[in-house]
Each structure stands twice: as structure tokens, then as C-alpha cells.
Image (tube, rainbow, N blue to C red; front, top):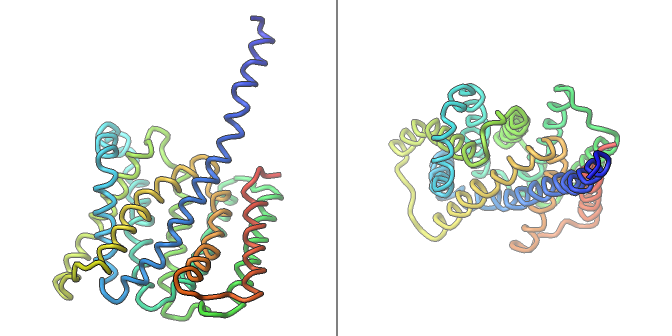
Length: 308
């Protein structure tokens, strides 16, 4: 085989990979977004029966149990890498595990699930801003997709309905959006030697350990919560799906396509929450909400593709 033939062979074998990786990243971001949409409903369901810190702590204990069989050994093998990047690992765990989800559960005490989904839709703007400040060129197509999806979210907020504009008590979810956007941006600085299972197990464990003093104090003051179908079921969903499955999918998506492009897909979240509210609660959004959904979906389709 000549050198020219070898070059053509490499092009044929590598081109599908270059095409498949962005598609896989967008799909994984969509999986995480859909699963997380259900977590707002679950957090709202737990608001009256499980204190926020206790709900956050036990979801991460469950998540650790899920990822331990394949993540604990990987983390042990890569312990030198984790020690070398301990500052990044601790900050990532604090933002993405300890703070973000605790704030979501705190907001679930009084904030409707629809409102939480709408406010969280602001986090992709922060992701894109971080990437732009880091020197990443977003491109005209991705910028247009982001602005279109933003317009859809703004119209969704302005259309009224059951999800009212956030008030002072809803600042918890605003803080959660900032934490999640910052966490997603930090993922782009993930050490290359640290693989996905090791990252999940390490951040979940560190995040739960940082929550442990707050959990102990909360149990001392308030006591525990009843183990019923209404508490165990949502916690299992949060621990297994919203934590282990969704975080694995999201982390991999950001690694494949970047936080900004994955963030465009994240704009689907308020749409997914609205659809869940319609299916589970019988809530409707009206004509304006339908148009808003179309804008969000169009923005996602535009911005999640190749930049240009």
C-alpha cells in the first residue's frame, strides 16, 4: 500500500469517528437533561417530608453505592492523579455535588418545579460565557442557537401559567444555576488521566463528606424522616438516575462537545419539565408556551450542531 493509499485509508476510517463524537455528546447531554428534569419534580415531592440537607446527603450515598463497583477501583488506581489535582477535584465536588443539589432541594421547599426548570435554564448562558472567556470561539451558529433558545425561555417565563417569576425565596435555585454552570465549565479542565468512573466516585464521595457535618447537625436538630414509598421512591430516582446516570452522561457529553454546546441542549430542560407537568399533573401552557417550546427546540437543533 502506497503512502497516498494509507492516507486515504486513514481518512475513511477516522471521518466517521469525527462525525460520531459530536452526535454522541449531544445525545448524552439530552439524556442527562431529560433525567434531571424529573429530578425537579422529585425534589418538589420530597419538600414536605425530607429536609433538604438530608435529601441531598442520601441521594449521594445512593449514588456512591451505584458507582462504587466500577468507580472505587478506578479512583484507587488513579489516586496519584487525584492528589496532584486535589484543588480542582475539591472545587468541582463542592460546586457540582455539595452545593448544587442541596440548593435544588432547598428551593424545592417552596419553589414550583416549573419555576426551578426555568431558572436553571439560565446556566447554559454562564457555560457559554466561561468558554468564551477561556478563548473558545463559539461560532455564529452556536451563538444564534443560544440566543434563539434564550428567547424561547424568556417567552416561556413571560407566558405566565403555573410557573411564576422567581421571587426572593427562589434565590436558592438561582444559586443552584450558578453552581451548575460553574461546575460544567470546570469539567473542561478535567485532568486527561482521570477517567469517568474515577471522577464520578471521587466527586460523589468528596461531596458527600462535605455534606456530612451539615447532615449530622440537621438530624440532631430536626430528627430523621419517615421511610415510606413517598420518600424512598423519589430518593432512589435521585440517587440512581439523577446522580449516577445523569452525571456520567453529562460529564461525558462535556468531554466530547464542550460545555457551551452541551449547554445549548440543556435549554430543553424547561420544555421537559413542562411536558412532565402536563403528563403527570395535567397542566397546560397555552399558545405562548407552545411557541416558546418551538423556539427552544429550534435553538437546540441550531446550536448543538457544528459551529460556523
